[in-house]
Image (cartoon, rainbow, N blue to C red):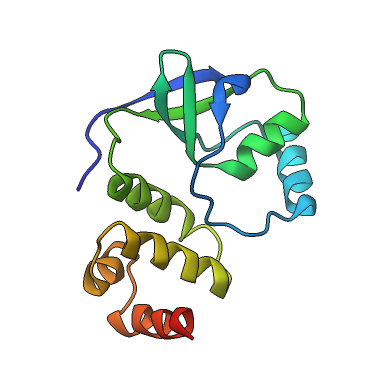
Length: 148
């Protein structure tokens, strides 16, 4: 399920909408401020990921902290990777998970939310484990907590 068609772009921040599915339950304002300070000193090192909604609007896939830091600084534009043809919820979840799962450890509730979204999208437990680079037992443990 590789993403083949994407492009790098500088996009107006006001054209970017937050995703319908939000996995992270807690964005620490102190970490957003630290990231904004870093942006002031060295700029934006990593692009956010978006998908087009229409010709002048985009849905955020990953990089919410980066988007918030840029907004805090009053930036008008932000560097983004635009993923074209990300039309299925499964592909959207795969991109979101690939980017976010490895940047900071999710809290248990965030793991459960992510696994629940994958299950709702029709993924098997084994597929979820493979996509998240986790053992099958990790997924099973979280599913047990989710059911309880």
